[in-house]
Length: 265
Image (cartoon, rainbow, N blue to C red; front, top):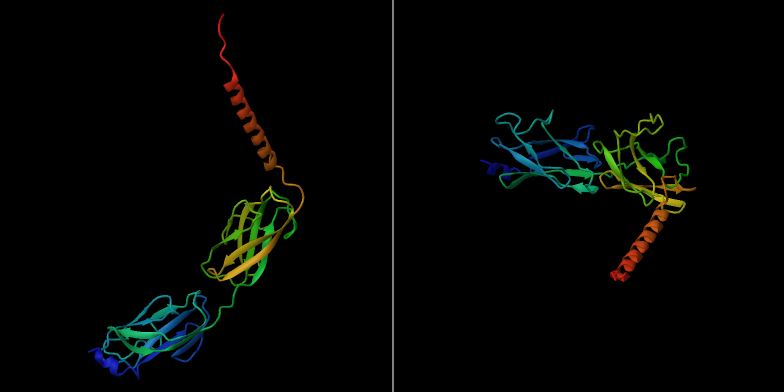
């Protein structure tokens, strides 16, 4: 029965429509930022049962079934099938195809436009009692803050890295860190805290965060100035003490080896 669909491939229509927008059936333009499409098919032969719509531009195959038993189309007014375009899809023109029982029955055109990208409003480190972006002392505990006007929905955490950090820090949209600002401008705010190294010289160090599922890289500057925050003896001093202790321990072992046992007379 499905062989009849193969002979009518020229008239079967695969419609791809943005969930929001009014593009003509058979073509849709959207950016790869999680946008959704409504998908339907028409002019199929009576008796068709199911087809699957696939494309490298779609997150996963989309199954279609007749609107009602015996119908030649899926629902053209309220498409029951939806698909999404992942962020990593390369912009360009794609040809989604509808296949069933191993045969292609229809195709359409899908134009994927570049995503808008991030719009970073603020990015850097903040220390309590200081102005955002001011120089900080080595060894300070700081808050890393990034505000993005066009954050990706569902991307709730990012990783900030810097050679000035003692370790990488994960910044979150729901983090407990108080950025000490209202940040009520509508942007998505990521925060997290970390400690700056106290064994690096004063200077300027890069701060990097990668967002939008690896597609966007953001860089800011960290300025270290002044003496390290007092957290006990500096690491260099501890290193010198450890070296001296090791040398003394070795000398003591050598003295013990050179002692001669005493002999009672």
